[in-house]
Image (cartoon, rainbow, N blue to C red):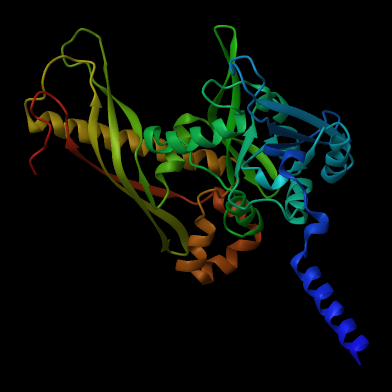
Length: 390
């Protein structure tokens, strides 16, 4: 009896000890790992293999930090991205942690041919963060982009994430695109995705990364790019935005043959799109309402009249209208509905959408549109006349 009781007690203690140690058998020590902060994916130049590139953050060591390497960059090629990453792991001193990746760089080769392999890799990898940001390496490769050293930041991946979030409110050109947003637009009818492009520039003999335009997709293929003006128009077509700068040109009123450039700031902007039906034909009415300030002038004189301010507002209306029109024209030329007009039709005119959706890229390219802009100045920031009386 005592023997059975002792055996039961030992068994209970053993089971309790196992529960306390649950999961410890596969534990990985932090000092044995390397965190991948940026991940690049592309096709080889001949299109026969995929290329995986990873930027690993290196731990800071004691002593001077000026010349110490801040990241480790590795690339490997294989038939699939998972195979390439296995090959990469054989040359790494520690176990790679892919779940820390916050920035993905897509190569132009795979974007123009077919991003299906990239999408499949995302779907099969449980460590991918849906909030991670996507960029496209324009005119270069992900490896070349991630190899650029960025002042003030340890890695190019971190620098790009900070740059696009900062400039969105300052310049009003590009917005962050997450993996979740990109996947949704690729798999949905009536909308196509865009990606901010990263370009390598050489200034004073040193390379730097610049956000330059938007890559435009149709289905699973990149079909072209938006330039700076078109990208600003795309940004203004969003339902609601905050921040941004743009120029207006004053005519030569003094007869000296000199046109004056003025810089305006957008505080808030709202865009509404209405699908219209006239005699069986669909058209779009776009209304952009914005408020802003005079940001910088190239003339020393003061603004003395509301008439002058009215001229500024009219020129701002025309400038915004040109930007939005340039974006729409380019998107229609690519037959890529990056403006979500198809989804708009599905909500506002479902019977029309059902008739057009089978051949939507072609139908989208033919839709006429009308743009109305109402820009109001709020402050001038000039010599005591900063607030505009309404």
